[in-house]
Length: 397
Image 1: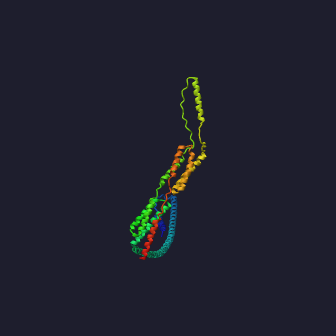
Image 2: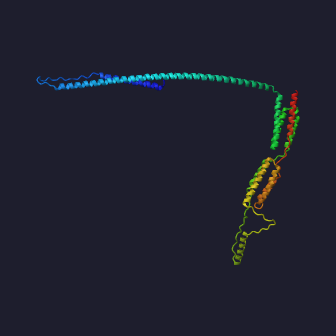
C-alpha cells in the first residue's frame, strides 16, 4: 500500500469521526428540556367580569412553542439521517479503498516475486558466465606459465658462448651503422665514434679468432682520422653574411660637394667684377662635370634591373649553402663563380663594398667542401668472416 492511499484512508476515517461527533451534538441539542415558563399568578378578578384576552395569548404562545419544537425535531431527524448517510458513504468508500489497497499489495507482491525470480535467473546466468570466464582465464594462465617455464629452460641453457654471440651481433651493428653514416651523410665524427665502440666490444670478447677483425677496424679508424675536417658550420655562416651584405649594396649615390666659403667683397669695382665671374664659373661647374676615361662608361642600373640582380645574388649564395650541406663540390664552386659575375654589377656604384664581397667569395670558392671519404667496409667483412667461422666451429663441435 502506497503512502498516498494510507493518507486517503486516514482522511476518510477522520471525516467519519467528525460527522459522528456533529450528530451527537445535534441530538444533545434536541433532547435538552425546554426552560420552565414562569407564569405569574393572575390576580382574580371580580366574578362578574370574565377576562378572555390572557387566555387567547397563552394559546398562541403554546402553539408557537409546539411548532418550534416540531421544527427542531424535524431538523434533528434530518441531521441524524444525513449523518447516517454520510457514514454509510464513508464506510463504502473505506471498504473500496481497503479493496484497492489489498489489490495494490497483491500486485506489489507479484511484482516483487517477478523481480526476485528475474534477479535469481540473472544471477545464475552471470555466475555461469563468470565461472566460464574464470575457467578460460585459468587455462590461459596455465598456458602462459607453460611458456614461461619453456623460456626459463631455454635461458638456463644459455652459456658464455651465447653471450659472445650477442656481443658479436652488437659489434656488427655498430660497424654497419658507421658505414651508413659515412656514406650517406659524410659524418666522419660519428663514423669514428661508432668504429671505436665496435673495437671496445671486440676487445671485451678477448677472442684470438677476432684478431683479424680488430686489425681491420684499426685500419678503418686510421683512414677516417686522415679525412680532412670541413668547417661546414663556419662556411655556412659566412655565406649567410654575404646574403645579408648583398641587400646593402648601393646602386647610385650622389657625390657630396664641399661647400666653399664665400670671400669678402672687394673694395673696387674691378675686384667685385672678378669675384662675380668666379662665382658664376663655380655655379656652372656644379651642373656640368667633365671626366676623362680610357674605357667606355657603363650605364647605371634601373630599379627593375637592380631587383633582378639582388635576387640572383641571394639565389646563388643560398644554392652554395645547399651544395655545402650536401657536399657537392662542383655545384658549390659553380654557384660562387656565377655570384662573382653579379657582384661585378655593383663595382661602379658601390666599389668598396662590392670588391670586399668579391674577395670574400673568392676565398670561399677556394675551399674544399667535399672531402673524399674512405671505404670502411673492410672491418665489416672481416667481422662477418669471423662470425661465420665461429658458427662453423660450433656446428662441428
